[in-house]
Image (cartoon, rainbow, N blue to C red):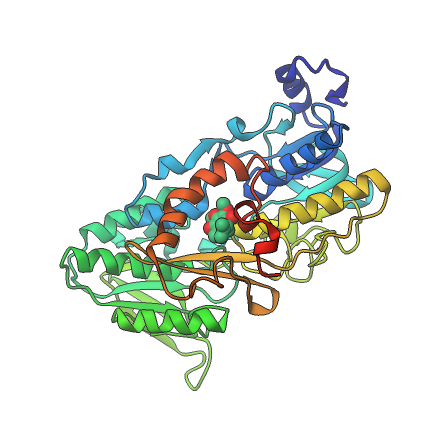
Length: 444
Ligand code: UQ1
């Protein structure tokens, strides 16, 4: 059933009719997060700009979440600088009345039949599919963590990686008196916003110093260095040392025992590889390992790891030409951030819309652009911007050294980005650095 037969003057009726599953849509978008909403709007706007408007309900967004969160804001929440509610909107309020909203989660793909399986077992038909389903947080891979996060005042463990716990992280930091070590962890492997684990160490340290609370902090990471791009890694390591924060590398959190305030780590490399180390903590910021969603991993769209297997330039699926993916659920070998989505969305849109109109995929190529704005303390931020191959691609690099934290970047990230995200990016009108500077002023 297509909603396009309904009169355009009744978008809410169209929404209602197309909300039932079992329908068919020209473009089905899996996920109402940053990638899904930005892509749906850019696709719709691209047709409109050509005077070839898509009908109401031609684009459908599949997502059961009641709410949409500005997740880059969770470090700001965990640093006590914003209320988590300020970064939350009802998802329905962000979905254009021109789109159908299927308030269910997808549970499988049948790309040979151009169908998505929904949680209730019904199927949705599509001509073109955009997968922006996000990432799975594997709390259970750290023994004891779920229970500890549910009772932070007792366990002294929190994490900015969920809406429920982000503000608890700040409560713990604010109430900590320095009785015991402050431990901040980062797991081995891919996480969304790979800078956030150390941002929490810097922001907490900055607060304790300003409040004259004597705290010693250690950053314990499963990764071999502070950051994936050597240039920024070197700068961050120097910043960390200057603050007196210790670090341990290749050391992965595997268990927490909140009754004894003990965290158990496994050494991943070197002479002690495989060895378990126990550390007592006074306060612990935990970042669980992450990976592809289980249901996507099992689907025909997945690569060998479980990410949606797309071409890293065109964002088109490697086997199914009418399938595209962006954001955290995609196989794109770049850092998973909202800034990355600003680079991916226009490429996906151009290539998909060209395919829809001409039968041939467009020739836009994503260069892997992503950004990680690293809060290094109150009033200071290091703006890492890079592309595939861990190559720098800096917006301001010709004027200033972006590996030196500054106050302008701090305010850009804390005050400007959340507004740009809700007022422009989710509506399809934000192109990252290209919104602010015309292309001739940007490095290629
Ligand atoms: C960006 O576009 C963006 O999207 C709203 C962010 O949100 C989290 C960012 O942090 C960054 C850095 C960008 C990139 C844009 C500029 C102007 C550097």
